[in-house]
Amino acid sequence: MAKKPENLSFEESLSELENIVADLEQGEVTLDSALKQFERGIKLVRQSQSKLEQAQQKVSILLDEDDTNLSPFTVEGE
Image (tube, rainbow, N blue to C red):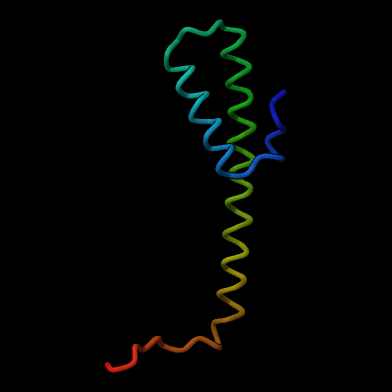
């Protein structure tokens, strides 16, 4: 049985989405199967988008917290 979208990593979701698209593009699936795959794909996209938004928020928070402590990077000997 397939894992729930919320239990998949971003990379696993992306890989499954690629497989779904490939299956649907071949056009050799029944209408019922295509609808089920499409529904699963929508769930995967929504969950992946949520994970990306969470990662973006974390990065934004980290950059805001460290903004006052950052200094230009210099390489020795320059």
